[in-house]
Length: 559
Ligand code: TEU
Ligand code: CA
Image 1 (cartoon, rainbow, N blue to C red):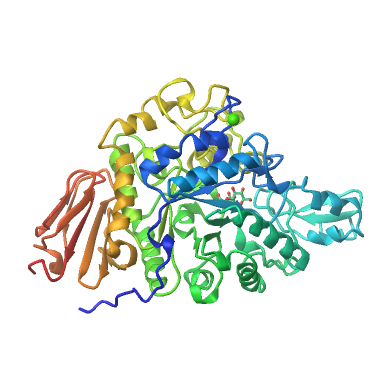
Image 2 (spheres, rainbow, N blue to C red; image 1 turned 135 degrees about the vertical axis):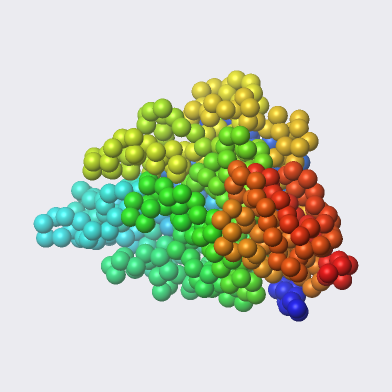
């Protein structure tokens, strides 16, 4: 059995890196106004250094009226007052660098805020050059919108502008007008702005809904438009290409073939993309995330195997369970109750031993869970509130919509970070902008740091393993037990080196018959959420949510 060594891939500094995502509004509030801020993040850098992460993806902190919590930017080169100042972000970049941590800025250029000077100028008169920075169309004869395209946040994607008698296009809220990327002036503005941030020594960019910038609105082509990849290649050339930084694109529409186009270094586009196929498998095809479907492990394994193998020799995968738009991992894929710790550790191992760059979302490293606020009035997320209104008005019962929000609403990810069991979980001395998850007395960072066997130290171990183990970074992926309904098992292979990774995704114990070539193998247990395994017998029994990794090499182990 000869395995191709994949070291043909040019090694990149970020190949063995782990990224930690911060949602500033909910991370740590240093001045007691109930809103997290840059000073709060700087105060927690030692905590992140202890965890061992190498990059921070910082969700937007730019000047913004916060219609979509900062994903609606009014000034790309200034900081929102509630988050801090330019001096503070420069201090964050410097203080992080002292701890070998680099900052990824969030690049939100599919749209701006309707308070951005470009849009204010564009609205001021049809003849200003800024008019063509956005997408304007005349109404239909009856005054109705140009067509029936919908916003991802509900309602029409067209908003009428009284002054000019025209409609402007917005795929998200009506206060997030889409930029016209056909316009070279828009491209240059964005490239200049990116270089301005790169000159500050950032580690790269996370690119918001970047698969939309090549849209052809009149042909209703939104994702993967014909100009998308040429625009990214131009962006690469004009800004980050020569800087050896990490770039990750958010691409809900990506397939493995398209992901290779983005992340094949020879194409000079991006380092990697976020694909969401493992997420949307739990969404109803018609009603989307508001009608959750149960998680199907066999389907999940099929999706992961596809992405691991199809990007094996060209391109690079990103690895994540959750982010600021998605429900908490342990609630969605594990058990937030009796087996919260075991299942959180299992999910971490199952993900971090795959090939690609892992992303940890704030609070995941302590096993934070989803929340169930009593009233819709407790929710802040524009997407959840828009769809609650739209769907209940269309007859969907309140209880059904609330179940949709409990399962997949974005505020699940946005409850304040739980630092300790004191007032407001140590997040703020003021009134938090969003209520806390009431389980913070049990689930918090202080308790995790006080327990050497906590989820925090499990993540710390996985992150350091990635630095020590070449097979974990470059080994190819071999799926095992494809059809097993409870167990996610796979091998990583690099030359003679092997990693065997076994994960029980259920609360029931499991007895397993491993493939013959794996039985009786001796190796070294690297990590386990119950115990380390150094030898594999004929039958392997796994406890509820048990997970372990064993390293072995073909030469050393008796077969
Ligand atoms: O998200 C894109 C997006 O489509 C999600 O917002 C949406 O919620 C989807 O249903 C996933 O749950 C990006 C940002 O991550 C998100 O926070 C912004 O709201 C959005 O773009 C607009 O900038
Ligand atoms: Ca604050």
